[in-house]
Image 1 (tube, rainbow, N blue to C red):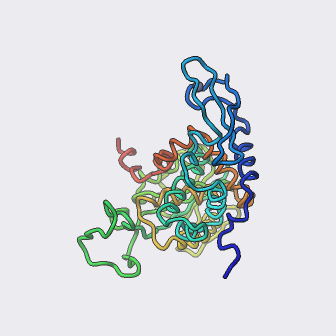
Image 2 (image 1 turned 90 degrees about the vertical axis):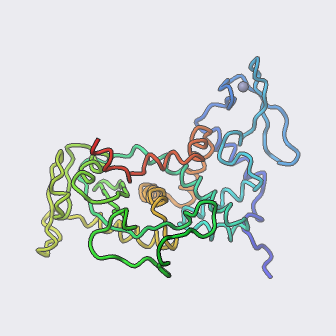
Image 3 (image 1 turned 45 degrees about the horizontal axis):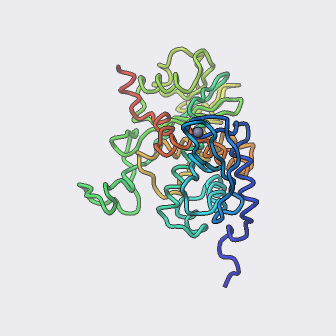
Length: 336
Ligand SMILES: [Zn+2]
């Protein structure tokens, strides 16, 4: 029998509170989360949450109290701050939500919800990323079906035979409607990456995807797929894989292919992803790659910093950052 079955038992409550307090007000002025007034002062503490400072807004007509967690993603949670900090840390080590729930001793659904919120908070760093300079591009088709998409939980009437352990691959190029959407990776030679899930790989989609991910006028290196060759607005060069040409001097897309070799094992951890959730997972992987020089602990701190911002927290709960990165309707927008 283990003496400590969960790591959060070894955390000191006051240290956690002090850390969250420092992170909450770091580079952000102490202000009332309701009327944004800076006319606030300390107003005692809570005896059930040691170390949590309470404040009171002194503005006429407001006079309400708040604390370090009011309006943040952690607001209203019955679990301790140590739970949240560990969950964020494990998320950055690419653990699945079930694994995190097990390690923390919380319910699977709590783990899933937290992961989804925290991933959303991380996406707030990625919504406006655009690459420039020399950019490599490559595409991949990932199997993504309807996992967990039954309305009201339980099993969904599929209207077809269950596919068994795993969806079998159909021949040819993938498509969203065939449960095999395309993923396009844009990798800057300066290091930044952008990943997009798109419904298909037509000329219009790739053109629109390029305009979102890469600044016009940049240099673009791809393979010889016709959709890339039709892209306009970039200095474009490509290698011909069918002629066994993988690099011609500076022209190659090995970084983009390397990114996929990292993405595949990352996605495998989740044992199948529904196509509606794919953009969220890709966006989080993009965040992890773009801040790969940081340790998981430092990445977790970035996510917690975003989660402690009330404006980010409310958008993260609604999943608005995923919507910014969801490119499945790309073709429709391109046609309009
Ligand atoms: Zn106020």
